[in-house]
Amino acid sequence: MRLFSRIPMVRDLAILISKLFTSNSNLTKNKFSKKDWIILNKGYDLNLINKEMKNDGISSCLRLEKEAVKRIFDYIKNKPVFALRDVKKGFYLKDIKNMEKSMGKEILLAQYFNIEDCDVFNDIVNSKKLLKIVQNYIGKKVKKVGTILWWTFPSNVSEEERIKHAHFFHRDVDDYKFLKVFFYLTDVSLGDGTHVFVRKTHKPGWKEFFKEGFRVKRYTDSQINDMYPGQVFEIAGSSGDGFIENTLGFHKGNTPTKERRLVFEITYALNDYDVMNDIVDEKKLLVKEF
Image (cartoon, rainbow, N blue to C red; front, side, top):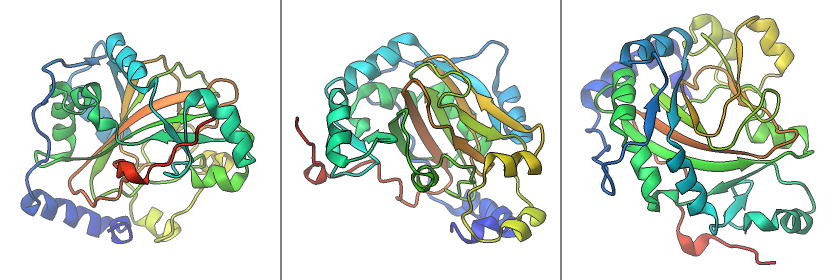
């Protein structure tokens, strides 16, 4: 799928077939609470969001209520996080310096696993407002593919590691049609751990295919600025601010320089290929105590 979805004609045909023949949506009513933590920013409605998504590939239309953010921080307070998404490198956030010392290098990012055992995440994923937006863009048979909650830290790491963890421009190919919802859970200032998106690059055609081919490529800032002048959008925001994005368009994360960043991400798509690895057998998780 990841290979052939890069071909424009195949992608369009597969979207049509998926909408006709894929199984029904796996989205269900919120099983923990009827509380909807999602707030639409002033002036936004379904039509405007869909218009921005179709035209630009991104819409900065959401935010979370402050109480939802507070509940998330309460939840992770005593929960281990895993360096570089490695299930064998768990630690508690207060021990990050000790963990870096034991690893012999600074930690660029660390992810929480199995977060969907927490009510607030299920509330957000199953928000009526959010599901209307997602289904309006993808279709009624949309599926929730996975959720990720991760920290990104100010760190001096190699270019190879920054490439590996998506800090160079790239395209995601999660399905034939998909989108991702991001929420900043900490304040994020310009130039300091921001997410960056290249507007209007989410519909690559034959020109892009013949240039990029089947390769999973990474691009530098200068390459992207030369290719798409004036289209690079750096997203700053306050804790709770959210945006929706078709990450088939070029995007990246900036490495923080001063403040650590916590982000919650949800992926919705027509098909679920079970590759997110966000749910892990607890017996496989190793946490280092200091």
